[in-house]
Amino acid sequence: MLINFSSSPPSSCSSFHSLIRLSNPKSQPFSDFPLKHRTHLSKSLSSSICCSVSSQNLGFHCKNQFCNERSRYPFGKRFDFRSCASVSGFDLGSFESVLEAVGVLTAIIVVHESGHFLAAYLQGIHVSKFAVGFGPILAKFNANNVEYSIRAFPLGGFVGFPDNDPESDIPVDDENLLKNRPILDRIIVISAGVVANVIFAYLIIFFQVVSVGLPVQETFPGVLVPDVRPFSAASRDGLFPGDVILSVNGLEFPKTRPNVVSELVDVIKNSPKRNVLLKIDRRGQDFEIGVTPDQNFDGTGKIGVQLSPNVKISKVRPKNVSEAFSFTGKEFWGLSFNVLDSLKQTFLNFSQTASKVSGPVAIIAVGAEVARSNVDGLYQFAALLNLNLAVINLLPLPALDGGSLALILVEAARGGRKLPREVEQRIMSSGITLVLLLGLFLIVRDTLNLDFIKEML
Image 1 (cartoon, rainbow, N blue to C red):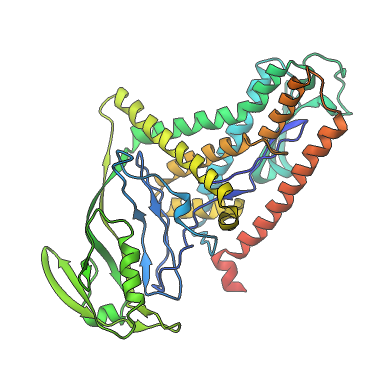
Image 2 (image 1 turned 30 degrees about the horizontal axis):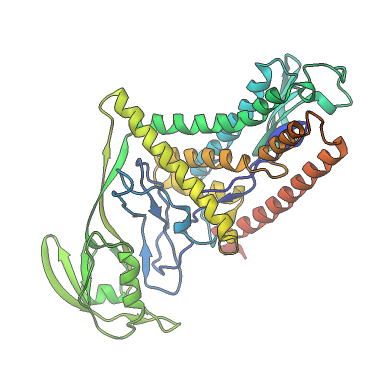
């Protein structure tokens, strides 16, 4: 889920990708296990993850948790942006994974701006600029009276129109200037970026379906122990990697119960220096062992293990074209529902969710972790970003495509009489200023949350 804001000044359609609500891969406090944390976005028609998390408060590290809800979605639950808490730390990882994440973000920007550009070009509307990025121009060329450029900061882009350009030699009353076209033509141009992102998201999912398939998860009873920290309480008392914890102090963990990992965590937290009885499944053999959690500095218990739901993931691929479109449609609508639901929760619980809004640095950091964990996860990451950009841009807020559409609808309601140009410019300029200030704040905050920056400070 994600919240992504794109600015759209009156004389151009632009995407300033500054705000996004992300699930942070290290946000929920679950572990002091010293492993590299990774986020993997499931590629299933309806799979969801809870992200890797860390803290010095507990002796656990929750791996990627695929939360299955087959009753609602045929292939499991989709990515849930609310499953993770606020930004607490990001790891950019390798340079290659960062480039992959930047590439995904740049492709989404190009698609969005291409939607605006093609909608104008195909209607014969004058276009003066097509830019990828903001800031100083790195490279440019001119073709058919349009300046195409790549700029220094690949965090947005814009399509420029010569409507109010004092250097343009096009007469102000030219019928092919955007401002002089009928209301419907302008609506098509402004909304085309959103349409392009929706189509791109569908194509990404379709390509994923036919090329790599979709993971299907099967849930089993218990909590899996992928790894055990050396010299920890778990290691000392006989837990081994690969063990499955079936119950704790008589509390069983059936496969149908949600939040089994957090239930086990709670029992261990509340039992420092007190014996905890665990029923273990080890290679098909069930037996019981007692583990005495060490006491953390805050008085809670910890045993130093890595935990995850006991699930098995397998891939399914469509048998024919009809099934491929069926799989794609289910995934597309499921992800769309998730994005809309996340947006609704953001507004209904803004005081609690505002801290989950992150900027382009966080987008790239999470994308890099996805790429490093599993390149296939970039499919869903890209689809989610596209859908978020589309939904957010339709909000009737200044500096968004929806804000421009709202002004056009006001004009239509006034019988074709536009608002005074000064009023429109004041409305849009104020929105752009707020987005830029908030974007700058988020860039600084998210940069300070990068792991290597934290280590330097």
